[in-house]
Length: 287
Image (cartoon, rainbow, N blue to C red; front, side):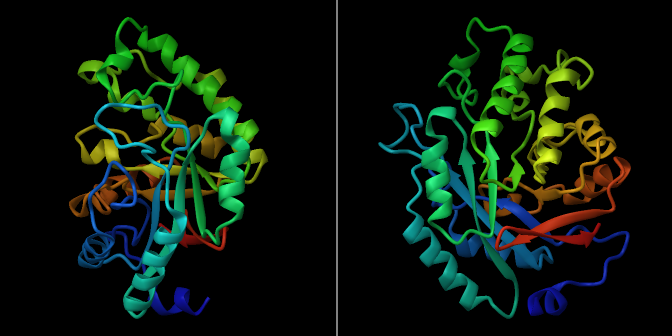
């Protein structure tokens, strides 16, 4: 706990939060960023605590542009690299050892075994695939009804959370909305899917888990994070306390992206604290 008193600064209303708990590097197939470039970017923005959360997506489907075993994380090399930079930057910034796990029900045990074998500080559980396809790719949307596929996505999220329990926060709830063709999210609202979303939120709260409040959509030009502010507000109303703040940056320029707006949204939804994690234990900090 020495680090916490040594590094964390007194807050002011104008400061951005100083912890980014959703970051990717070259250890993720979809990033080429060096770990050191992400650390230096964090320092340049006044951050005192970051957590790398590179991807583990076992049994990810084959796409021609991706290498074999895409998103299969080499934990030993990843941990070794984090340990090196932890030591190098120990007097400047705290660096957490995290992972973002891609959930699928048929690999829930494999995911859990992977988590248990490593001394992670923090685990994000996310849904990146629907019906074994990635919504990032445009052909996912061919011939589908976006309104129905989002309902399916929320139901699939709850199904996976019931199968996989070894996580700390649910990653970017309503992630699917990032990739709707032409950015048309007119069909999406909390009210439309309140039954499915409430079931997810209640499950998370009951099991002592939290939400990844993800600024990437705002950084890319949207008005809301993942999850949408109405979902975040509902989470608070239902008794949710644990939120982490993450940029989901895959490049140095995205570190802590739009955190000023993210802070305002969190406060407007009733939150006055956010969490970091150490050895899978939440630590609360004033927003």
